[in-house]
Length: 349
Ligand SMILES: [Zn+2]
Image: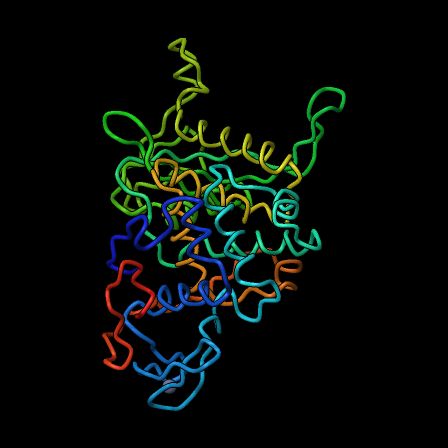
């Protein structure tokens, strides 16, 4: 998005104490969002020209067309009823807790009036995590499917049927060992049509794709991949555990299941499963991020670049909206609003 290499203590809070001192008021939060959205100065969303005047309520008047734009207009924080300080605290908890948190924990921690409000805040945050146009996986990638979600334990015979979804999983393998990034998406079924679409959506052509021997994966070599099917039968014949043919995807699947049962107590409805999976993948791909403040920065950066998410869309249509936002600050410095590089660079002195 931006070429900036964000640094702790300068571009994002390095600790909980720093977080509290930076964002004591809604005006502080607005200042920060302003800088994240227009790091090189205001660009009018209506006429796309750069430059304008700051107006009293934390927005801008366009120098070209005269339109007024609030800093949060057209972002995830548009028309919010919850104060920005509470939003920021929610973002901080979402980012700083390695496994995230449930709506109930958020409601209790921030003393939010109603459960649906806390629930919707977390779902709004989840909805920004898949950046449009993100890179596909490359190199050597394991691909498999697994049934995830809807498990109920404690019934006779262990698991009740529940509503599980078939989820495609792709994981990069690192050389000589270790895993890179992952991608997961709910599949309609295990057919070649669904699996080929999953692979082409999430894996860069030219990659080496390792799968099991399922016929749904046949033909990947014709789509530009080096396909390496591993046969379970052959593994069994060699006396090997066929469950260990694809260790990376099986590891990721079991981590995802454990996360859903742990953080969310398994109370994840089928309609919202994809957005929980998006959150899991976001966390998995940042598992080595040394600074949780950096994760906070990335979530807010995605949130100001994301279109508003209406409550009725969260309830009625759980599929994340793919409204393509324009990357912030792609256009040059308008001299009227040039920001000095201060210790906290968004605070124009
Ligand atoms: Zn304008």
